[in-house]
Length: 191
Ligand code: SF4
Image 1: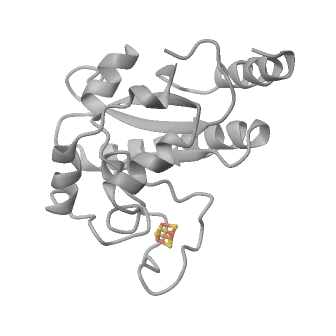
Image 2 (image 1 turned 135 degrees about the vertical axis):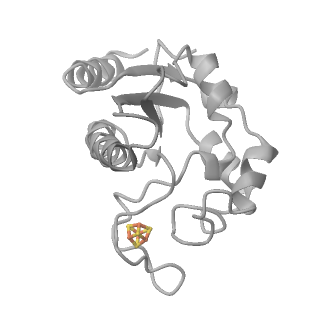
Image 3 (image 1 turned 180 degrees about the vertical axis):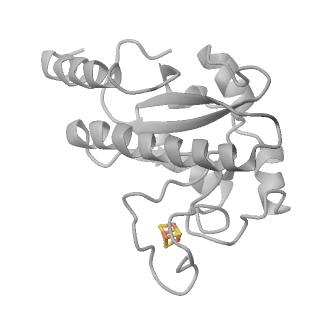
């Protein structure tokens, strides 16, 4: 790693320590576990988000295009938040945890954007920033805060988490959300 890049990584890591990240891992995009089945669930609209925003299929492109976008980058950084719920029916708690996770993703994305050009940020369950999405009639209102869904890219989060040594499930009555940031430049710690 060159000195300049080490300084950037140290700077980011120092800032990351101040944020309420539950677990994180640097890894190489070539180790990403893509799954036709995951993408297929999107296309069957299993979560109800298919075709509703710029953050989900089909707007994010075909699975091949999604893979190609990921492979343009040399490194990836995955992180989670884990939030306790009152019980498994705590819809309000789930919603609040999701908002908290997306706000944290904004902060983490900004850290990487300051140091690296044009990182790709993927997050959780599509985009719900606007009450009514502009899709498909006009461009996204907030492209900097619109994070395509990890599953929409066909990434098998359960196995990717295992590969990265991150817990997919943090126990009963908790919700765990994931984000991944792709960026260019060498990171020594990536697996
Ligand atoms: S930021 Fe708004 S316009 Fe853009 S994808 Fe999300 S909901 Fe749609």
